[in-house]
Length: 142
Image 1: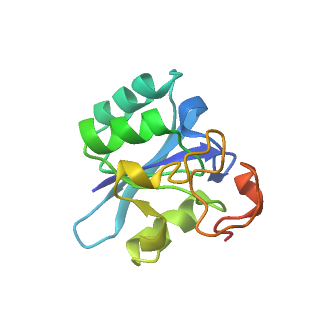
Image 2: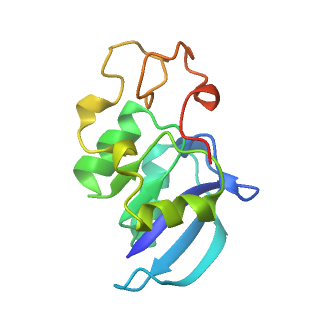
């Protein structure tokens, strides 16, 4: 399995569409990390980022924030598992994914993004936290 994490200085980066780097992990079927490395995306925008993931044969993406268009592309066109609303260390997030502890953060349906219909609202909040789009104050902390 290949996993990508939106990456920023060792941590899960803030927003998918503007990621300058991704940390890519290649896992064995047993879940052991065979290798990982940080790679510059040299891309901007949802379509270009999705192409980057497709080029690297990514099956799962971990990020903090993601918009409607990117969610739609990842789920419907690229068939990539999406885990959003995650912060903390990138390596720790991958470990939690391997342990099955990110299930509550998996976006399975397009309708889960902006389900309340408020553009600009935090797309990955799991409760009414009043963050008004500043997800750094409301989601999973490592």
